[in-house]
Length: 266
Image (cartoon, rainbow, N blue to C red; front, side):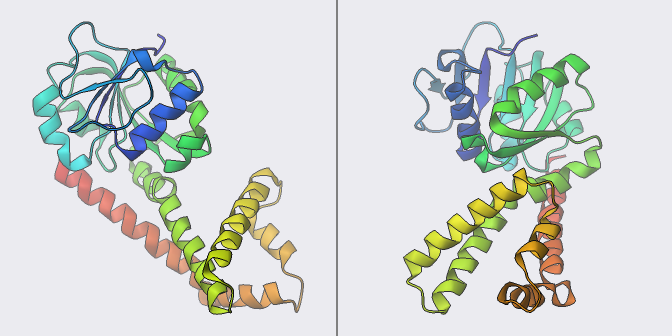
């Protein structure tokens, strides 16, 4: 099997980022993509968009990219048309494979959880499937590879954790960057300069962490010399595991919301 023809049911910010990256890297040609959206969006050249799926043979893959809350409506309107598609991929947060299988007929159903940096090839894509064969799993890994790091999640129960950490993670990091810039401005830096410095600092630190053999914790200790200013700041973050506790609560809240959406979709 080779995925060359693709239908997208819903193509918002995330689906659009994935699609643009696939087309930019030549994995899929725009002329081989059809998109169903409620309203027209700016899409790559050659991609067709309409309110209904096209006539003719089924594609190699259909990807569900609408909001999870629209699942029942989309199944009502399009399930019959895409029945028996070889691969159905869902990027719907919280919607379980069994729920999808109850509404759609497909050769294999694959859950995918990308994050927004997939649009520049620096994202993370978590994958899980109980129904995909080894060949389909390999095909999915190849398809997602241009988007960034691809990780198969072995157990369905862990997929919400991946969604909370990697899927939602950029949002949490953007908040951190904003807070870092705000703290710099509070020390007297111009706000725009503080933002530039915060963004560049996080970018460089992230690239270094990705390239280093040392763990992030070890890198933090390398930056912080004994009795220095970095160590004094880390003492604030480390006191009572303040930062770790905050992030555990943050991810737990996101994971709970995924579970709520899963229950609502069943």
